[in-house]
Structure formats: C-alpha cells, structure tokens
Image 1 (cartoon, rainbow, N blue to C red):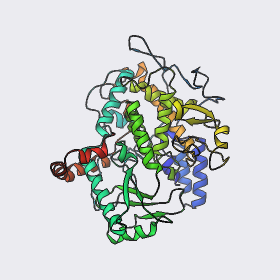
Image 2 (image 1 turned 180 degrees about the vertical axis):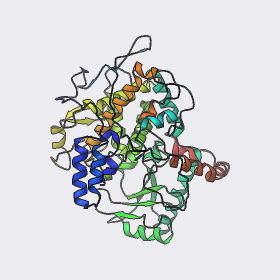
Image 3 (image 1 turned 45 degrees about the horizontal axis):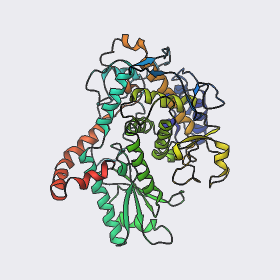
Image 4 (image 1 turned 180 degrees about the horizontal axis):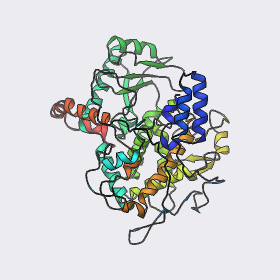
Length: 486
C-alpha cells in the first residue's frame, strides 16, 4: 500500500512515518525518494503520545471492566462539567505548503475518477484556513452553542446533511436493477439480495453497494458473471476485478453510468444476517446512526475505511460503536437525548488512547464485554494467530472480524488525534479565537470535498425526475424501504 494514502495525513506524523516511507520508497525504487522523506520530516506534528496501559485504562473502572476519563460529567441539571485542559502547540505546520484548491472539482460522468472522492489527502495542510473560511463544511449553516453542546448540534447537522436523499436511493436502486437483470439472464432462478450499508441506510454518498447472489453452484461462478457484465457494458472499463483468492470471493466493479462501486458475492448468508443485526441495534440505540456517519466520514477521507487497504470495515466500526455504547459506565446510551458531542469525544478517547489493543478483545453479544484476547483467539476458527484488532463476530462466534485490519494502529493514531483536536476545540480558550463566530468544531477533523458535493448535485439533477416518476408508479415505499432502517 502506498503510504502516502495512509501516513501523510498530518495527524499521522512521527518517527514511524519516516520509517515506513523509507521502507516503501526503497521497495519502489522511486527516483525522488529523498525529496519525499525530506518533506516528510518537515511536517511532523507534536502530539501527546498515548501512555502505556496494562488494562483498558487507569481511570474510573466500571463493573464491565472498561474506563473513561472524566472529560465531561453530566450533572443532575443536565449541564456538562468540562474538565479538559487546553492543548497548546500541538501543530507544527509547514511554512510553505499551500493549501490544495477546493473549488476546482466538477462532476463529469464520462471522466474516470479517483477511487475515493472523499479523500482529503492534500487538504489537511493549514487546516485552520479551511476551518475559518468554512470550506469543506457545507453542513454548517448556523452559529452553534459553545462547547460540547455546539458539537452535539453540529453532529446532528452533519448527519442530516449527509443522510441519503431519495434521489440517491433511486440511483442506487437502478444500479441494482441493472446488475440483477444481467444475473437473471444467466440464472433465472437466482436470488439477488442487498446487504451492507445500502440495506441498513447507513451509507455515505460514495459508499459501495453490497450484493449477494444465492443459487445452486458447486463453486462461485465468478468468471461467468464477470464475462456477462463485460458483455452488457455495465461496468466502467477495467474496473471489474475478480477476487477469487479472498476469504469471501467477490467481484468488484464500478457502475459505468453512476460511478457507484459494487461488490458481488455468492451464497454468503452472513452479510444479510448482519444487516438485520445492525437494524436491530439502530432501534436499541438511536444515537448509533449519528455516530456511524461521522466516524465513517472520518475514516473514509483518510482511506482507512477498508480492510483491503489495512483499515477497518464498516461492520468492525459498527461493532466498536455498539460495544462503546453497551459498556459506557456513566450514560444510558439508549437515551436519544444524549449529548452526541460528549459521546464522540469519549469514543475517540477510548479507542485512540485507553483501549489496550494488545491484550483486549471486543464482545458484543449477551450485553457486551471486554475479553482477554488470549482466551478469545484460542476459539477463533483461524487458530491462535495474532490479531491486533480482535472483535468477535456476534453472528459467527468463531470469526474475528478485525483480524485482517493490519492498519489498526494507524486507526488508533487518528482516533487519538481526533480526541486531541476536539478536546482543544472544546476548551474555554477556543471561545476567544478571532474566528469563533464562523468556526466549525467538527470541521477540524472531517471535511466534505467539493467533488462529493458536485457528485450529489449531479445525482439530484439527473435522478430527481426519475425518483418522482418511480414514486408515482410504484409507491413511495418501493424506494424508501431500501434506504431507511426498518
């Protein structure tokens, strides 16, 4: 993996970055490796490094064995006592690195796009300039309250802005219909089902569509379907990939008309079951979708949202959030009126600073618990193999969901970074900044690129009429059932 994707985010600077750049550049024999390494060393961030922990934390421990710092304590009257100290001199910015242009993106359906429209690589330099100008924070349309109350309001606005629009659901339904037509032409009795984020409604504008095909085959007919998709020109040229050696063999493609990425698997029931499992927990924890949207965007723009590139999958992330809510020692996380700002910071604090990845595994079933990783690994189907992020699959107890996330420590580092940055934004000193009236606390850690905004506007223009026609002919539920958790 090119470390520029996963390491040159400013929050990931440090000695390890220089080391990995050396390893990678040596292996690639890049002519300009010395210049890359020189630039690397000039962009270091001086962040507080997490302390060593022999358990989950040294803080107040609950009866579940977890702990949270006393960042914010909810008082009986509903107010929050803030106990954070300001973080000073956290960032050493490069003096000459110009910010990347943000307004030169226009959506052209015929032009081949980068793999990740949401990536903010190159945007994170001189971050304060973007924050003060409001660029990259289109959800911010009002002045927020100070402190964690304002962060709560901003998380709600971000969720409302990024939630799927009816036109986006209609567009995705057309992609599914196109692929299903090809599949039915090959195998008329095959059953095509949607799972993943499109099924649960927890998808961002650029998220993939996950499909599973059920039928009677001795081996998954990957090549046969690949040839049929090529014949019907469903996918962009050269975008179809057959991953027949993966743990779950799949076909990956990018739809030619919409640029939506699609993963197709065969006879895998776990994905469909997981979708029902997630829908159930969104009913138990109304705050779950708000947390997931922010965290998905946070990882997506740093290219840490896919196991294929070392990040953590959406399923792993959701299980981490569920575990966090289950074992929270001070807050009834099923209460829909919880302050989302506090929850978000405490999530980053737990998994960025206090969680012991070396010794602790996550269990969600039966109310949730932290387990000794050594004991969990002994019963895993992959044997006693080291796994940095150990998450027991609640639907398949022998499956370690996080075993392939080889970049889990990079995720831990960016979570720690987010905790520091948001903590600084919540401090009383932030209220005296010159840009306090136009500042965006959430915008310090996540951005929405202009390319994504243009893409959504293109969808709105092209599918707005089609959506209305579909509603009239089939009824509103035919589309909404796909995008709203039941």
